[in-house]
Amino acid sequence: MGRNNVENWRVQKCAKSCAVCEHEFEDKERLYSKLIFEDGQYVRQDLCKKCWDKKDPGLSSWKTTFIVPPPPEEEAVKKENAESLLRRLMAKEKEEDYAAIFILTVMLERKKILVERDVRKSEDGQRLRIYEHKKTNESFMVLDPELKLDELESVQEQVVALLSGHMPDDEEVIPLKNRKARPSRRPKLWKRWRYSGRWCAL
Image (cartoon, rainbow, N blue to C red; front, side, top):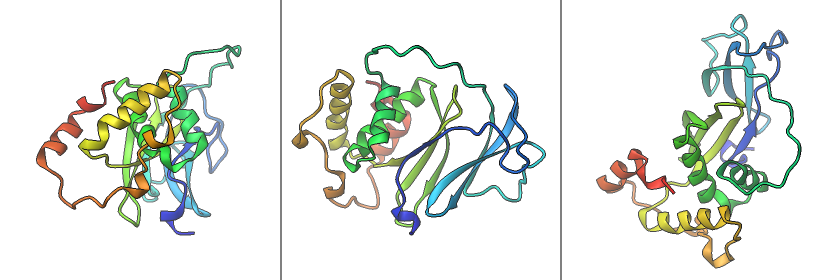
């Protein structure tokens, strides 16, 4: 299976022990995480300082802090929020959710819940953005749909509707796989607006 055929997103938790020596991480211990490609999928490995080899960083690597997971909370009915919606859409693994997933990850990055660790390009030129949850250390791998300006407002409306509990009709969802090919060069305004981060403030 080629890398361009793997799942476009995954959520992977930080391991409780080193992938090499099996040393159990302690609360607030500094460690290294790296992303490798194994058996047709992206896999996260977490290593202690002694086992970290800077000459073998994998496809992507970063330094992080191990945090002991909090005890499970009592189950209760909660209103959908950006994080719970993101997790639900990623669990569905449906292509029509690409755009909404990306918007939600950027929203959570602006709220300092997620932090972007790296950006990788697949063999077909698509961008795969790697985020890490600041509290749980989970890694989120999200495909960047590279939304055009005329698609942005519609996707934002979809996300707002989903957060309010409304499931959009099929005709309201942007079929990304049927979009027209983009020109290789985008207008300068799009670049400046996109990287300012202001467009995703819902």
